[in-house]
Length: 68
Image (cartoon, rainbow, N blue to C red; front, side, top):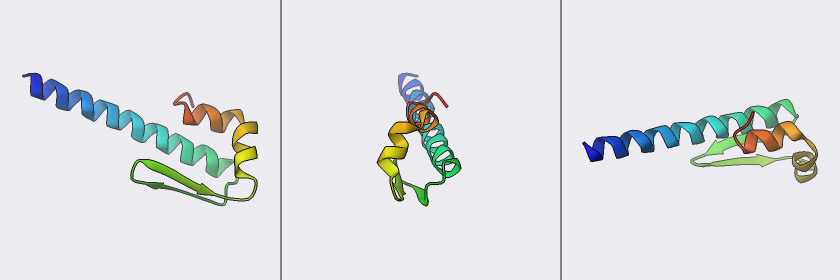
């Protein structure tokens, strides 16, 4: 029983992380970031002025915090 609970909790945590990664990708796409993709557990993005855009756009910051 304990193993089943642990597997369920792990699956829920992984699903939450996947939702947050998806929200980040979506927010970056809407903000006009040139290239965004999920690479395993990492969201990779590239584009001109990306760091400034990330810091200036509350929607991007909140998506990264799981509050989108």
